[in-house]
Image (cartoon, rainbow, N blue to C red):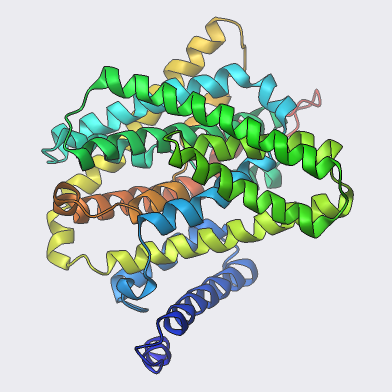
Length: 427
C-alpha cells in the first residue's frame, strides 16, 4: 500500500521523522474523509470517521499501531484536555444554570446508575468474570458525545431548552464518567477489590478538589487576560490553562477532567464577556474547534489501527460480550433517563415528556470512550480482557453513532420536535 511504502522509506533510526510521517498520513486520511463526508455522502463527520475506523480494522489498512507511539499518557495528557476545554468554553453558564438540576442529576446519579447497570450486565451475561473489569467498561462507555446530535438539532431547529439539556449533560457526564473510570482503573492497577463506599468518597474528593482548582486557575488567567489586549498571547494562555489545569490536578490527585471543564466554563463565559474583544474571542474559539476536529479524527483512526491487532478468532469469541454491551447500553440509558426525567418532572421541572425520548436515544457514544479504550495501560488483568474490551467498546460506538445517529432525524420528525405548531410553538 502507498501509505506503508512511504513510511517504510523513512530511515528506522529517525524516530521523530517517522512518527511525523505516520501522523501526517493519518491526518491526511482524516481530511479526505471530511471532504467525502462534506461533498458526497453528507454524513455527520463522526459517523463517517466511525465507518472509516471500522474499514481500517477489517482491511488492515495503514501502519502498525506500534508506529504511532501512543499510550495512556498521550491520550490523557495530550488529547483529553483540549477536547474537554473546547466543550466547556462553548457552554453558556446562564443556560447551564437554567438546567442545573436535571444536568447534575443525569451527570452524577445517571452516570453512577449506568456504570453499575452496564458493568453488572457485562459481568453476569457477557462472560466477563472480573467485576472490576466489567465496571471499568461500564464507566468507559457511559460518557456521551453530542456532536452529531447537536449538529442535527441546529438543522432541525430543535428548542433551545432541549439543546442545552443534551449539551450540558454530556459536558458533565464526561467528567464524572472519566473520574469513575480513573478510580476503578487505580483499583485494578493497585490490586484492590471493589469498595463502593471508598469509591464514592474518592469520587467526591477528587471531583470537588478538581472543580475548586479549575475555578482558581481559570480566575487567575481571566484576571491576566482582562489586563491585556493581544489575541495570540491570550490564546496561548488558554492553551496553557487547558493543559495546565489538567496536569496540576492530576499531580495533586484531583480530577484533571473536572478541573479543565471548570476552567473552560469560567473562560468561556466570564473571559469571553469581560476580557476578550471579538478578534480574541474568534481566535480562541476557532483554535480549539480546530484542535477538537484533529483529535477526534485521530482517535477514530487510531482505534481502527488498534483493532487490527484483534484476530478473527478473538473477534468471533467475543460476539456475546459485544451483544451484551450494546444491550446493556440501551437498557441502562433507558432506565437512567426515564426514571430520573420522570422523577424530576414530579418535583417541578415540568419539561415535555417527549424530550425524554430524545435524551434516551440521543445519548451517543463517541470520542471519550474511544480515548479511554486507547489509553488503557498494560496490566495482567487488563491485558487478559483487552481484546474483549476493544471489540465491545468499538461495537458500542459503531452501534451508537451509526445506528442511533442516523435514526435521530426520523425520531425528531415522529415526535414533532423542531417543527412549528399552528400556535407557533416549537414542540
